[in-house]
Amino acid sequence: MQTIGEKLEEARKRKGISIREAAETTKIRSDYLQKFEANSFDIDLPPLYIRGFLRSYTRYLDLDPDRFVNDYNAVLASEGKPVRRESHGRVDFGDAARSLDGGEAAPAGRSAQDQALMIKFGLLAGGAIIVIVLIFLLVNVLFSRSPARTAQATPPPPATVQAEAAQTLTLTAADATRVKVVQDLDGVTLFNGSLARGESKSIKKQGKLLITVEAGKNLRMEVNGRNYPVPLEGYGRFALD
Image (tube, rainbow, N blue to C red):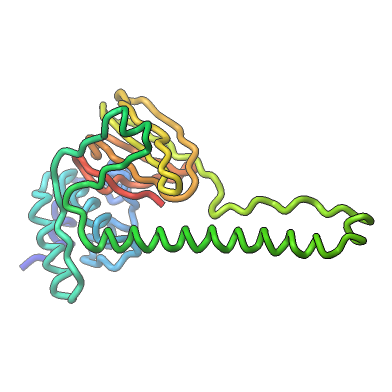
């Protein structure tokens, strides 16, 4: 019985396509495709991303995406790893009033694993803020106890500590779609609108973003010029660190 990798390699060679050509068309790294065809899924990516890559690659090879995703889930189960089923359906982008209030509706079908991950990120962000405040207070206390040194040489004001340097996210529509981008750090909506085919939108980001997309297969993402794959094909929401 053929493995997942053997089926992928056979389909690609039958179409006369090289790994490089497949990577350029699907926007999936060539080393990931090589590992898939070697039936090796031990890459530093969450299973959700691997499933998304499998769907894109098998659809590109005119294969049945659901069948290969089910085979991949079977591999996870045989290795004793948890298998989280994907949920599909239309996602509400929220009305204008809810955007102004900064509210964000949680997507249906969110698993306990996702909720635990969100709590973990929340705790880490809270801890980072506490550390920054303590450092700022400590600096103020040290300088307030040394008036003579302050008179001789005024020290520069303490630099603002940021959890993460600002980055530029570029969204490009391969075809018409609608996108909503919310900054997880403060709940601010950075973009909420439609993108026409070929249209691009650049957004300054800091930290994790929550991105809701109407048609994931039509969206391309770059962060500081580096391609990031969209882990879903249709409607859904995902996090981008």
